[in-house]
Amino acid sequence: MKKLMLLVFALLLAIGINAQEKKTFEGAVAHAQLNKEETTKVMAVQKEKNAAIKAIRKQKLHKEVEKEKIKEVKQATSKKIRAIVGKDKMKLMNAYWKKK
Image 1: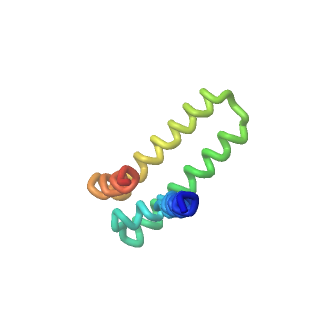
Image 2 (image 1 turned 90 degrees about the vertical axis):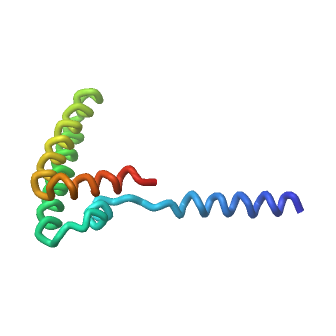
């Protein structure tokens, strides 16, 4: 009986872990309630960021150099997005990433 209870508990725990919300950029955009024009522009900037990061990773740089270049790309992207959506909506997007 104890083994059965332990098995059920382990199964429920595994299901709970897998059921966690997967956060996506699209989710952050929806959370900030961006209009269609803002969404289109922001998604284009995000696509550019992803392409730039891929290009950096293909260069096979030293890990620290790669990490620094990726950080620069992310900071530049964040500034571009903030310019498109404004400070308030950017706060909403950041809140989406921080919530549990």
